[in-house]
Image 1 (cartoon, one colour):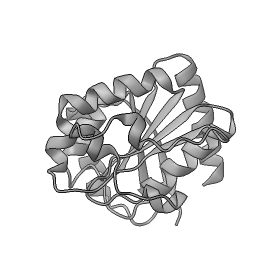
Image 2 (cartoon, rainbow, N blue to C red):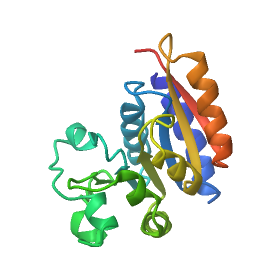
Image 3 (cartoon, one colour):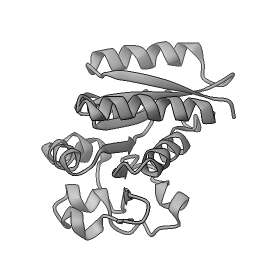
Length: 193
């Protein structure tokens, strides 16, 4: 999968330099397809190239990005979207490698309502001005409606599928949903694991 990431990194670098794509959503058709690992790996590769990158955990039903970086997940995206915290209060900055992280956070809320609100759209507009690339790890597209909204408001979408595991029917349904959301599909990653 490493060659795929290097190719994707190069393609995203071209797109972000052009300013046509700054916010990129990672999604899949089912759980356990490897989208979070793919999002983390691509964000890390971009940061290694001295790109200023923000990685957002928008999979609010099952936030796990904090585990990859051994971070707390007490407050994050949910606190910002609910107006309880400002972005700078919950953003985990890493000036050394240029990869900042916004964890999902905790609390009682409806993820579909929270991510579908105007606050999420405004947040993405703001961070796209401050970062070279914004990588968003979202839930799978078929089971959760909030991912459709994220796909619509993101500049681009990368689909992750598992070789030999992703069912063709779900892949076709995923493509149909992305078309309905007027999403800009900019790539796909085939996960061999």
